[in-house]
Image (cartoon, rainbow, N blue to C red; front, side, top):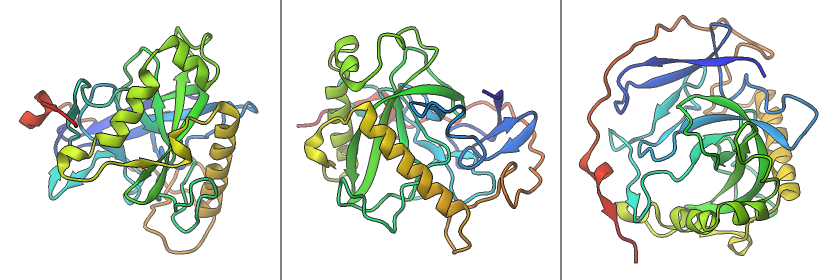
Length: 277
């Protein structure tokens, strides 16, 4: 796999904070430039980490900005933080996205009956190492679950870093139950309830809330990759910035200077538990 690095701009936990992904010293788009597949094995995929495990800040690939830096989601003018759903702290896993995938908002997912959420496929990585914002790595596909978030289809793909010490033991979703007992159940509880402290209803799941296996999930990823291929080659107007360094219609990457600034203070909710009935 090519060597990817990051350039950090602005104070973490502030609206100005951005993390750009670089390759050979040049800014690349984590949405468009990083190949989803680095080999012919469709069970191994590239992952861009957005949120480190136990982090509360909601960081995500920005679809609208040039070269799609990772930024903190802004809610009512303020950086967004997820609450701690007892007994869990922040996100349970390394949370990220599959590059070169797209959940099409103009099509109804045939498995869930809901339209896509207009984002890359989401990833939850269950390995033991805590990833950094913008870290790029290779992972084994294990399975998935179909969250329906505010009426939109929002697949969550379960993976493990190919270099993780447990990777050889975990090859499909049922292996996760054996090696990390209780993790899949807690994952469902978290996704169902994480928005409740903000006054929103509980989320639902399609397919009776069942985890789908690796074979099924490889097909979901393939479809999302095909959706992205159609989108990146389309001339239709979308809110997605397609500027990239490696594909057709590529442009020169900007010169971004690393800023090593102290983090902004986080709100008190980051240090508190929310109890869900």
